[in-house]
View 1 (tube, rainbow, N blue to C red):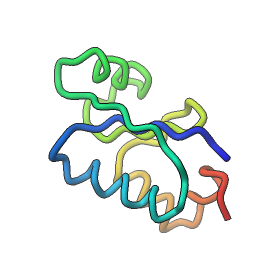
View 2 (cartoon, helix red, strand yellow):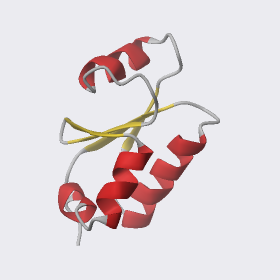
View 3 (cartoon, rainbow, N blue to C red):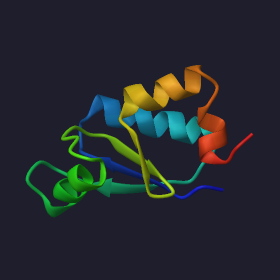
Length: 86
C-alpha cells in the first residue's frame, strides 16, 4: 500500500473532504497540520512545486494536488491504483 501524507489546516472544508475521501477508500494516511506561516506549510509549498493551498496530498512522496485533483482522479477511475487499493 502507498504511503499517503496530507497537509491540512483546521476548519478547512476541502481538507475535511479530502480526508473523508481517503477514509472512504480505507487507506491510512499521515495528516500534517500546516497552518499559514508555519514550517509545515513552507514544506508543503516546496514539495508541491509552489502550490500554496491546503490540502496538499502526496502519495509515495509524489504530489497529487488538493481535494479537487483527488476527486477528479477518483471520478476518472485512477485514484485506487495510485493509492494501492482495489
